Image (cartoon, rainbow, N blue to C red; front, side, top):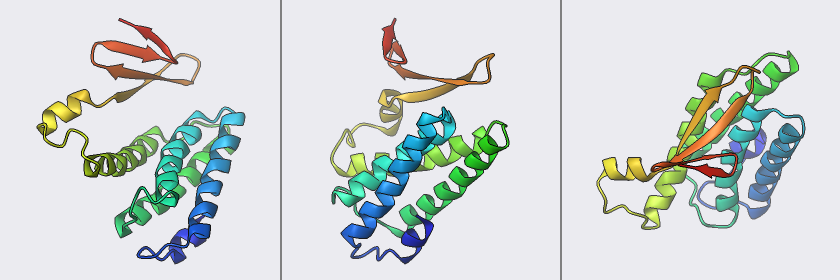
Length: 158
């Protein structure tokens, strides 16, 4: 993935290269999910979504995006090394890179005309916030807070 990202022509990306980069992220995510590597799965999922948009010509690549993708690859390597050592990955690094990827994702949505007329404070409140909560068994659960409703693994509660 790194080699393809480094040689990618941003102005005119080769569709085969984009597809290969996407497939790599997709394979990493699938393997991570199979082994229960939650942080690796979640980080790769966001990266995969952006790469999917790029390969489907829904997203115009920029240099800062490629730099973020390369930084994500480094975080993924660190996460995998932590899992191999039977330790927890650095969650601060994972949260930071996921936030960068989400910002790239949000910029794309804003360019498509989604609520850009609303003040930034309102957009932040409306946006789903992923909250990670450490549980006693060393795993992480994801909760999405959507207004006053909270979704935990697909189940809505008030």
